[in-house]
Length: 271
Image (tube, rainbow, N blue to C red):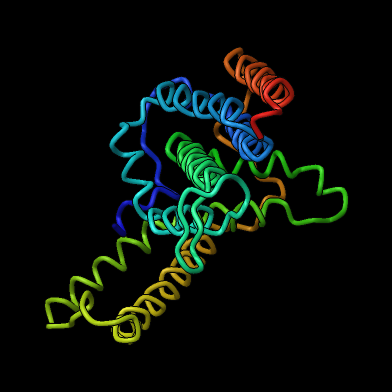
């Protein structure tokens, strides 16, 4: 379960999405997140799901890998669906018992929210699956470059954000290693109630914090030894250039957004 976290992982490849400009991928991902919250019925949401499936095919990311990346959020997904299922009072009542009421509107909302969350996580995972940490850093810095006019340290912010993403898989591997070591010493981490499991995590959290601080110190020392002084006067080996595929992606996302508004308008009675 721990190793299934997709945030920060990069899968090398030569697909359409891998070759796209990092700035375009970041903007399109943010546009997708905003657009999916504009969906008001299953027709417009279905359009976004179709777009997510097309992006998955274009990325050539193994479908099994994408499904495994959804496992860590299964509890959140189930909890959200149950809340919407039993606490939505609008609509025709299908079943009622004490404080629990099941309506057709509740089923509609639960499925709608579940599909929306799955689409969001899938597309966000595709961004890190198809973009190297270096390209992600450069893309964020380029997009935030107008903030330099108001003395915002854009390069430092982009570097911190990318380092945080980059070290998520490393820390996950560290957690897995520490848990395996504790189990080998006879630690019981999987049985008992919530309080007992929380107490059992203490022997894991302490060495994890120590390891994280040690890695941060080693990274800072390595950057200092390489005379790293921030983004001032810094050049790049690979220059970012937008190509035809990036223009096509922007045009398709514009058409996708227009399609959402049209479907929301023509099928407003289904809301």
